[in-house]
Every structure is written in C-alpha cells, then in structure tokens.
Length: 308
Length: 158
Image (cartoon, rainbow over all chains, first blue to last red; front, side, top):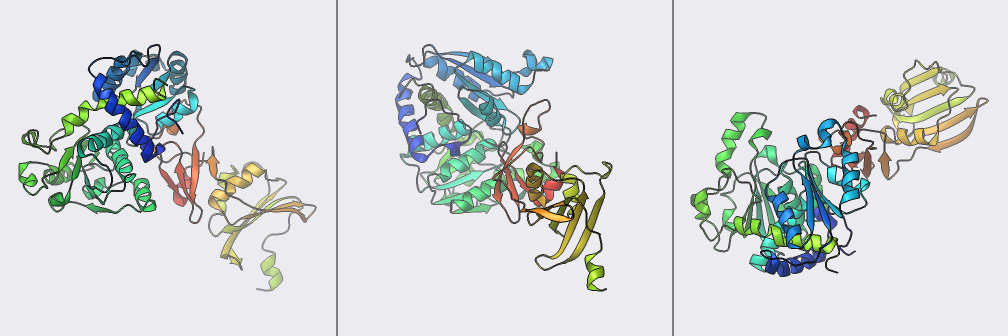
C-alpha cells in the first residue's frame, strides 16, 4: 500500500519498510526545512486542534508552508461553532469540504479513527487522548535512524508515564516493529503499560521487561526515551512525591551510562530531565524536536501526492 | 424427586422461544440484553441452576408468543455463548439454532472507557468492537482500543 490518500491513525498502520521510505524522503526534506519546495502548491491542510498543542501544531503548519501549500486551522474550540453546540462529526464534514487533508488532535481516544470514518480526505492523528500519537513516533524513530544509523536490535528504555502517555505508547509500538534487543519499560507500578500494549508486545514476541528503577538498567541502554510523569494522574499526591525523584535523569544517574547513550523526549519537559543534561553528548531531544518539520513535510508530501 | 417432576418445573409453551443452555446464573442478563423487563406482558419462565449434561449447571428462559429475530440471537451470544435457541410453534420445536458470536459486535454495548469518542454526546456513532477472544469473551473497541471483558458486557448494554 502506498502513502497517497492514506489515513494516519496509529504507527502500527505502517510497515517498517514504509517507515524507512518515509525517512528517506524526510532526509531529502531536511534540505528544504528552512526554505521552500513547491510540492503541494494548490493544497489546503486543515488543522483541527480540539486540544492545545505547541510543537505539533506549529510544525505541521510550518511543514505545509515549506511545501508551498496553505493551512486553515483552529486551536481552541471556544472560537468555533462547537462552542455554539455543533457536534464533532458536523465539524469534520465541514473541514472535509474545505481541505485536502485533516490533522486532528482531540482529548477523546478514537477521535481520529472516527473522523476518518466520516471524511473522504486523509485524516492524520495528531494525538487522541492517551491512545496514539503516530507522527510523534515517526519523528522519534527518524531521530534514532538519522543519528544512530540503525533502528534494529537496540537496547531501549522507555521511562515515565507509560499508561496515559500517548507518545510513550506510540513509541513502544514503533520501536517494537524494529525488534529491539531488549526493551526496558521503566515506570512506577501505577503507570505501567496498558493491557492492549502488553498484548501487542507478547503477541509479537518482543523481549521486554518492566522495571521500577532507572539506575538498575541505565548502564545497559543505547536509547532512553523519557516522558513526563503526569502528576495529575496520581490518585494520591503523596504517591507522586514518593516516585518523582526516581525518574529524574541527571548527571549523577548518567555517570553509569554507556558512551553511546541517546536521550530522547517528546517534550514538553517538566523536571524529569535536569537542565544540566542538556549540554551533554547524550541529549538529543532538541534535535529530535527540530526533525518535526522535515518528517511532517515528508508525510504530507507522500499522502497528498506531492511525491510518488 | 421423580424424573417427570424434574422435567416439569415449567410447563411446555405453545408458541414462542426457549433459550436453553444458558450459563448458570446469567438468565437475567439474557432477558436484559433482549430488553425484556417483564412489563411487556409476555408469559416468561425462568429456570436457574438446573442440572445439565453439557454444562453441569445451566439456566433456561421460555418466552411465550415471542420469536427472537437473528439480531437478538446474536446479542445473546455476547453473554451466553453456549446458548441454543428453540423456536416453538404448536408445542413443537420448528427451528433450533446455536447462537454465534460475529467477528464485529456493533451497536449492542457501550464502550466502558468514558474517554472514548464513542461516548461523546450528540454523535451519531455506533460503538463497534472486534472480538479478540471467544472463551472467555474479550472484545476490543475499534475506536479507543480498550478491552471489554465478560464482566463489563452486562454493565455496558445499550
């Protein structure tokens, strides 16, 4: 299956070879991510952000503009007819009539899949509740592919909120497609992976282990994917206070890290990575954020037919 | 208790439906999934926890003057996958079917995840689930990916 006209709902909708095809295009797009290449001259992209976003929304907007296309958007429902009582499906029908593709973020899980049922034009999921964030996973994987030169057979740790964090879930699915040598899932008991994610790992015979402490595994990791621990998810604030310290990546814990460790974070960061880490050789998260534009350029160009 | 006494806990019905081989203790849920509260006026017999060669114990439901349609039969499969449906006319079984669980369960139960798009108010959306396991039953919401187990199903009937 090619990319043209396709919905992007979950990272698992794509095969590893399709992701590599996307990455090769993204590599080319890096040349134009500060200029312009007129691949989507007459195309209009709708950005429907029912939930707030900084990076995702602005990088989609930038990507479309660098491709010579235009963007229509809303990012707060207060300013739309939804505030007057218009329902979700009518809003999607309207965007379907105006635009060549729809990028959607919503706090409800399954919103993008439902939008894809309604719309004829391709729908790209920019985050649905705690379920999926496929374009973030594409950027995460691209960063590893680009900077490490390979995706297969790595020792990978995923740290933080693995239960409610959509970026973490999509990254776990995504990296699993490239058969990690060992996948360490590091989180407090309360924030362990969801049952459906665990089933996916089991069914695909992924070599994974769930652990509670980063310091026990840090010396083994080639990739450390850090996510924000979401304080608001803890039923008891005292529980959060107990665990938060053990999930702080700082110079002390990195004393035992491998030389080739790469730290990624989908951002925003709160305090789970100390600022002192930013200047070490391990920090790749700002680089990762910068790849948001070329990867999304590649995806839009492929889906909207700017590249065959 | 003599054999005839055992067999005649409830008398035969002239016409209607007999749902047999319901897992013990779930007959009330079967009525619930059919939307039968008792106020409709049908004569209904409910037998629970009787001996069964196949199941050890089973429940039976007899509904007079009401023949179930295939859609209702499919619904029963969700909570009573072992059930058999006997359509009765003139005291005789004219049709006997075993319930069958479809690959996709549509518009029968709600998703238990309050944050699923299928629970968004004012949306013309039919909740849809993929059957991932049959015994014990496990469904997966097409939209949010959440699993639905046997225990959830009775609570989530639409």
